[in-house]
Amino acid sequence: MSGHAPDYTTTLNTIPKRTIPSTVKNASIGCIALGIAATVYGLFGGDANLVKETQGAFVINFMYWNGVAIGGFIFSAIGMVTYARWHRRFKRISEALAMFLPVTLALLLVFLLAGGIDVYPWADHDAHLPAHKALYFKTGFFYARIIIGLGILAGLSYLFVQKSLRADLGVAKEKMEAAGLEVPAAWESKLGGWAGSEVEVKKAQSYMLTMAPILCASYAIIMSMIAVDISMSLAPHFFANMFPAWYFMSAGWSGLVWTSIIAIAFGKWMGIENLIRPKDFHDIGKLSFAFCMFWGYTTFAQYLPIWYGNMTEEIGFILYRTHGEVFSYMTRLTIVVCFFAPWTILLSRGLKKQPKVYLSVAILMAVGIWFERYIVNMPSIHSYHMPDAGLPFGFVEIGMTAGFLGAFLLVVLGFLAKYPAAVISDPFMHDDPDHIEVHPHHH
Image (cartoon, rainbow, N blue to C red):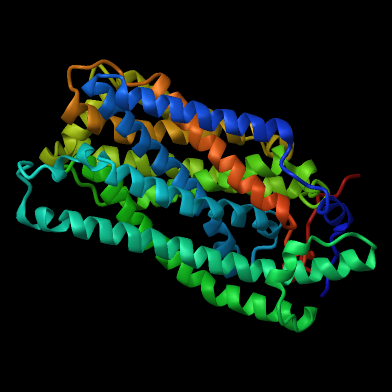
């Protein structure tokens, strides 16, 4: 290996005694309890509109948190394909996000089988769909592609993470034993037949380089399908060609944002504060800024032709959100929080290098993307099931979002508590020996 070697001492020293911080664990459990309470209240509160609002809140949160989980993880694959060195500093956090995928898939199946499928107008045989849409939305076919598609993403991501972990655990074990540190016994189950660091690291890198393009292609295809099936089909007579790509792009953005939040908020706990440098935060901040701009561009690129073309199938979807009495103000808020505010702040080069400042912007973007999921999905449910109701935003939406957040933190931080939070064996953690930085000459 060449280039400047990172110092893993702090990372390794924190491993034997690391558990989820008690305040975070208790708060997460409290959030889950709040989410359960909000769901029970919504489903059994005796109001038909409230039931649909609760179902809508689930769709919003599934689209958001499932997007965060797979969207954050996919940057591990993208980083492998592009040989990105800066992202190796965040790679284990990205991998940890994928651990939430089985949870979102299980919750989605429970939701649909428990009657949530009724929120989709096409589930009603009197929906008057064209023949090709009626065929596509056959219930059995719908369940099959959801289970197979999300199962493929969860399975491939698990295999990728296990191969990445094996090399790191073996190398970390050798370093920890040499330093007299206690090695967690649970690691042994992943290290059977260990062939030595050099051989295992090469095997892991080769495997991940082979898997990464497959993961990237699978992500684009399956997340496009999810965008159509779970979100766009809430308004079955609406269709937009850019919608699937718009969703999986913003899912990647949300994953990148949550990777930043976890890296900054829990960096000291994970023992990686010294490994993630200001220039690394600058890099992930620049990419977040680029996604913010791209989201603004693709949003307007969809809006403009629908607006000036006055397309029959699409204009109602836009008008209900931009000019309707119920959602117009929420739409404006979404655009400000999702685009104008973070775009303006991230113009600063210096702010992206300051972790605490960048953390506040990352949280703002995370909230903004949730609002986008809300304004895309809830108005469709409102227009079909409760057009005479007011703005469906309150305890149910906030409580269920808190529940998902609590579960997400427990799963992700639980994974990061058991394993090294840095990819110790990855040769691309070292600085590029051929990299040249040009600095202005000061007299």
